[in-house]
Amino acid sequence: MASEKKVFNIIKEAGFEPIEDKGIIVKYAPENLSAKIAQFFSLEYYVLQLCKNELIFLPFSTITAGLKREIALQLPYSTIQTVSVKEDLLNYLISITTDTDTITLSTQQKELSDFRSAGFLTFGGLTASNWHKKNFDGTLKTLQSLNS
Image (cartoon, rainbow, N blue to C red; front, side, top):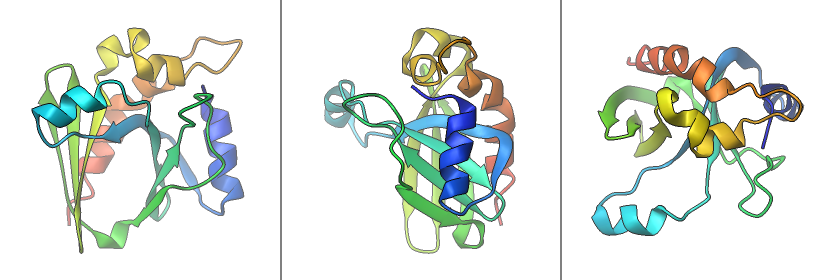
């Protein structure tokens, strides 16, 4: 569980400049039905945070559901060729094509996120603020604008 302030602090400590209200909860998208079934029980979630010059993936601990103090992946905007977003049942799929690879992510729709993992992971303690839900539309719009 992580407040948006904690996300910002970890990213700033790592030397990056996060952009306010531009972070959501994601996980890697399964490639087929078997992978969907297997991944249903996976607790590997990340904060996808837009920063000044790059996208940052900040992992959650699969044991404590707290944030790890490490950057799992950094994608400089200069390497991103295309970004596509499409609805997929109760989620959205985000495909990011870089100079060398394509990464497909899944993110939970904002409308149901209060009752799903994204809402739980964004719980910041004393306040029940779901920053995934608050940031959802703006983050997806900004991601799509990264198309070169």
